[in-house]
Amino acid sequence: MRLKDKIALITGGAAGIGYATTKRFIEEGAQVVICDVNQKAGEDAVRDLGPNSDFYRVDVTDRASVGGWVESVLEKYGRADILVNNAGIVRDSLLVKMKDGELVKQMPEADFDLVISINLKGVFNCTQAVAPAMIRQGGGVILSATSIVGIDGNIGQTNYIATKAGVIGMTKAWARELGRHNIRVNAVAPGFTATEILMSMPEKILEGMKARTPLGRMGQPEDIANAYLFLASDEASFISGEVLRVDGGIVIGT
Figure 1: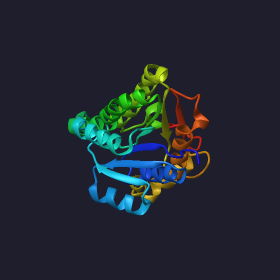
Figure 2 (figure 1 turned 135 degrees about the horizontal axis):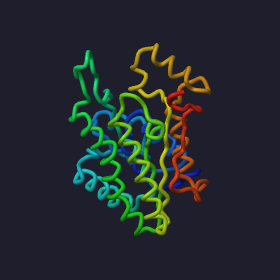
Figure 3 (figure 1 turned 90 degrees about the horizontal axis):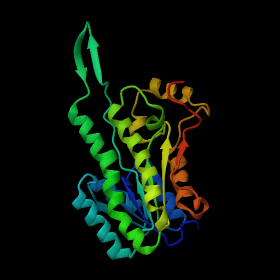
Figure 4 (figure 1 turned 135 degrees about the vertical axis):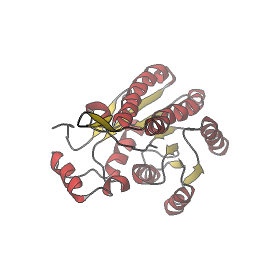
């Protein structure tokens, strides 16, 4: 078992990629503590996942909420070996939309701020809360969700792309800062992945995503979970500051 007796914390672990990652980590011997803002989804998840999972309701944008979660985990389990910053949302919109020379629509400031607060500040909050414990215990692994659009860009996702590019920057900074404490820091950049949110899109759009992916299919949450598992394991013991694309070979814009 690649994660035998490890204590892993996963944000947004109640559904999608977070749930799949939790399941894979448990299969490889970890005790996983997930957090989510959705109380019912979190409780349902740990009921399905069994005794090697635990759930706390946490708002990653709230530093006090995050701090309380981490303190509770340390009190109960004594350590924090792995952090997966998975929680995130989308609020897509064009920067501006013009018609006949007139502005008819633009990305709402509230949507920009909300995505930044969850996808970027949330990663900062959780990492800053966990890092001291990892330093004291002599090491750990910090993994964060970015995206291929954080590398390649995309239309209509200014806020989302800003967060995912920011996560890449923080990953590289933290790999340098924390490496001397035996803490590895990496990120995973999924391509089109069949999560609940994505699969709610019209079939025509989904078929277009498949057609643009050289391997000819959507990624599955388990594909991303396996990437997190590799980076969390000792098999990746000399990898830090990297972004692992899991995207079927796609380059956005092609």
